[in-house]
Length: 454
Image 1 (cartoon, helix red, strand yellow):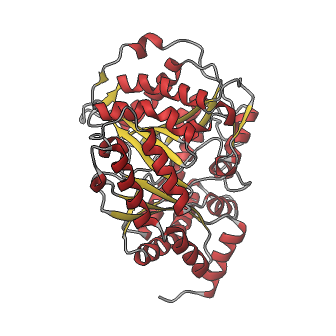
Image 2 (cartoon, rainbow, N blue to C red):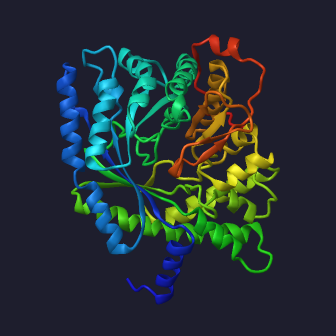
């Protein structure tokens, strides 16, 4: 393939000035062969299996980073949902499994490990319930373990018993990690229609339909798209902007495909998917909100923001799909508040509210992500916020999620600091009217009809 010198210079500019990077290389590992009724033996099997597969993951990605000059920010592991593979263990809780995962993550040198998870969209088994009740302590006593629970799907509806339970679990997680800004909640996400090949934390897990060992890659690039849109000459129409984003997404995706396939080849693993998501960072300029404002909005969150985000999301998918036949994961634009400098600024200036964020999740991937709310927010209110987001995912046949942080002792206007890529989150207001009776009814919201879609 002939590569023009101008393309090389363009890529160098993207890396050096516009924050282009490979956000994450994630190795998915099946733990289905580790099952054993004795918890100690099970933990030993899990530890050995992870180290056997991932002992060269960090070194290999560092070699690829040096070879191509492309920064790889995070190395991660996802495993089969622990609620599935630990179900046969004789134990009161699964906290020891979380400690095993944490130990394996530290030994392999990766950043995070995901899969302390359960899939309960239609109901809970004893193992699912045991895992969910273990989450607060598991996230408090570990550093690198991430947890997720799938609460709803378009086929099954919304498990409202689990939604109510997760409101209480999130509050308890916040309480047990209050001394660290409730960071446990930043490692816990609930889903509707969870993808089984998602390389991004905290929601990554290795789905039951996945291969034995697989490499999934998540590319980033809000800074590159932002620079491309701002660099358009004259008065571009929205059609011109969409075309510009498509071409930029194509270039970003090709880079991710090349890196992912080489990592997989060297580790003798299958190449899984390339996730096309635009994932922001707290760095100035590397912001999804900044792209929306580059389209002509005075401030992210104002009227027109949902339409601008829909344009962005669709253009990224179209451009990325042209560049790779292995697209999967979440693929879209992430709008985490704490991890996006532009979103943080919009919340502080009052243009972006929780309600507007919820509306924006109708047209982008993920959902309410890294949102801090007052520490005294009732569990029923957290569950109601989750239920709203699950309903959007269920009805629209898309993935949605909630990663919400009721930071103890905080009120609206405070800022919760997490550090690193997790950034800092201004505490946002929630409605004071109660949803306790609604959430307390429990049961399951039925799956929607697939016809009559008006």
